[in-house]
Structures are given as structure tokens and as C-alpha cells.
Image (cartoon, rainbow, N blue to C red):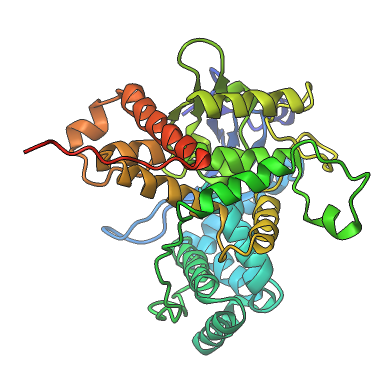
Length: 428
């Protein structure tokens, strides 16, 4: 490890070596180190090893930044920590965590967990919504040492009654994830919510649009094209869907892709020119974390071109928000609410944007398309794939997916035209 002289100017000038995070030992000051990140941010650390033979553990006790703690103060802190660890057989690192947990609120642990662990996870939006809606203003205000199993159970039951089974289960899952992380980090001795059972019985969703409902839904969207508010009453204006929302809903039914993947589509993801247009959804936006290539057949390609032409030229998104101050896409939740208003007007039994995706999968199955092809189009996780296929097979199956989506577009066109499908049977 590189060493620095115990000199103020030398300490202040310390930089990362070869652009990598570097830990410097401070000459003449036992246990004191300076940790310099790749950005140049530096923290004082004290290294010690409590315990005896076979139980010895390496500890790194953080003191503060190079700017906020002087060399003299950091050196004195190092002497105090080493005395406590070696002469008094204490562990200052653990003692600090225990002291912190005694005053720490559940909300503090959530903030720490979110910042250090969960901010990059796929569930981050769901977790944040669950926390803000059901946990923050109740359990979030309590000290960790005051959290009781019974209170967590009561919250679970209350949310099941007011928010439904899925919300109740999400609350319990999130609380367990946060508290388990706290245990692993040494902030808690145990998780009071461990093994609490879920009370929400979630029934699998089965709703799909019927062959009769599909044209009704599609034509209702088409009927709004070209309409203006000049000759409409207030109620009629309230039922109108924006052009971006209508286009997004049509694309969900044409491609079978998820709501957020459609409404958050970026123009840079689209290749609309050429003989084989494609939409490439990056892994950071897909549920399984993998790049998903969606071949665009004629109707889907035309819909994307129309949406891009209607959007602001300066926006990165196909469906930019018309109300947000910054360049952001329209809200997925707004599309859901708009669709609920529409199907209510059409007297169609409750159906959501995700049901459009399920409708595509169901109609493809009716067309006789193989399961693995439907799975590829919908970008489902291939659980049954072999190691060889999962790791080494990077073929995108564009041809198979394009043929499947082309068959679905042809079937959709047939439904919209009202023609009857004729079954062909071989003569005996």
C-alpha cells in the first residue's frame, strides 16, 4: 500500500493512483489511512483487528472527510480507537452501529437502504410508491428499537382491507427486505417481521379483450382522431384521450409490450427506415434486464412514425409529457387512468393496459404460434432454457418474432374488417 507523510500539504495533495481508488497509509500514525476515491473525494479511516486467534476481524472505522477533519484530529481519533480495541477489548465500529440504531428511525434505515442498495433495482418505483403510500407516515416514524412484530402485522392487515391483497403483500415484502438488509449491515440484531405470513390472496389475472371487444376498443380510439374541442361539451372533453395516449394504447395492442416500455420509448431506440424496422428496448428498461428487439410490422411501424412526427423535435421521447417542465415521457399511470375512462364509456368490463398484452399473447396462441415464439415476442424470462442456451445463445430470433407479429397484425386487421375466418380442413 502507498504511504503518505504526516504532513498537511502532502495529505491535501493526495490523489488516486492511475485513476483508481487508493488507500494511503499515514506514516508514523498507527492505524490511520486516507481513502481517496476516483473522483478525488477523500475520507479518513482507522484500521484495526479486534478479537483473538481464529476470531480476529478486520474493521475500517470511518472518521470523516479530509476537508472536515484535520490531520491532528484524525491522528488523535486513531489513538482513541486503537486503545479501545486493543487495551479495553471493545469494538468501536460495532458500538457506533448499536448507538446509531438506538436513535435511528425506520425511515432513516429506508433512506440508507434505498441509497446504498435498492436505487438500481427493477422494483425501485414500486418500492418507493409502497413506502410513500403505506409505511412512511406510520412505521417510518418509529425508532428501530421500538418496531414490534404485532404492529407490522396490523399494518399488513389494514392495507389488505384498504388497498387490496397486492398492496398488502408489497408492504410486507418491502418491510422484510429493508429489515433483513439492516440485519446484514449490523444495524439490527434481528428482523421483527421475519416469517410473518402474507394475508393477501392474489388471484391470477385472466382478463383479455374478446374478438368482439377488440374492434370496439380500436374504433373508439380512431373516432377521436381529428376531433377538436370546438363543438364538444365539458364532459366530452373530459373523456377525450390525448393523441399520445391513443397511440401508446394502439402500440401496446400491436406489439404486446409492457405499458412502461411503450410510454417511455425513446426515439433513439427506433430504426423505422429500411425493409425490417425494429424497436430495440435496452436492458435497463425491460423486466428481465435483457435487450429486447421488437420487429415492427407495417401497422406498428406506421404508428411509431406518426407518434414521432407529432412529438416535439427536441424531445428524446416518442411520447413526451405535455405538462412536465423537463423532458420526460407521459406517465404510465395517466395512460391507465385514461384507458379506464374509455372502457367505462364503452361499457366494456374492466380492462387494463396489461390486459392488452395478455390479449396479444392469447390471440397468438389461437393462431397456433409455438409457446417459445410467443415467449420471445413478449420477452418473458426463459426459465426452462439450458445453461448453454441461456449463456451462449445470443441469436435474437428476429425472423421468428417478425413472423409472429405479422400474423397477429393480419388477424387484427381481419377483426377490424369484420371478415369471418375460414377454417381449412384436408379432405379425407
